[in-house]
Image 1: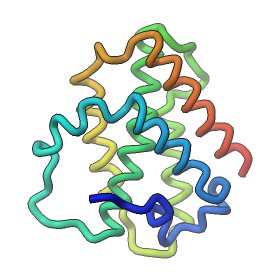
Image 2: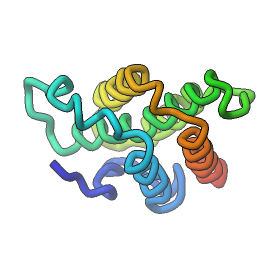
Image 3: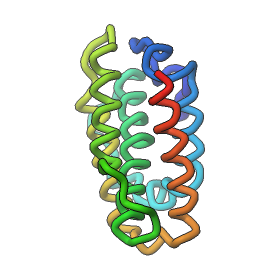
Length: 153
């Protein structure tokens, strides 16, 4: 199932969170690069028994993108491939998601965001060897873009 990236922001005033669609493009490039390696191989394990509404699926996708990026960044820091920051990436991601949740005009979809994030945490932990110095350099650059975009707001 393919979800329009702009639909991921339904119910969220995205211009007040980050620029128009910029985080989705950045996070999308991360997912297309380093983060989806194991997700497709284990998609059947993450299958839900109840079909999700488009809004729920989009919230889950956001958790996959942002949570996966943060989890990957923190792994690269633990491996010594990226410098330690003043705040762990997962805490930064939680803060971003909390701001988005506060600005949302629709129903709370945070459980689905967390579901997507949890799926990526599992994938990252099961595929730690994938995160080489080179892959972590890419993750670091993409995470820096996410942070730069959120600080502009």
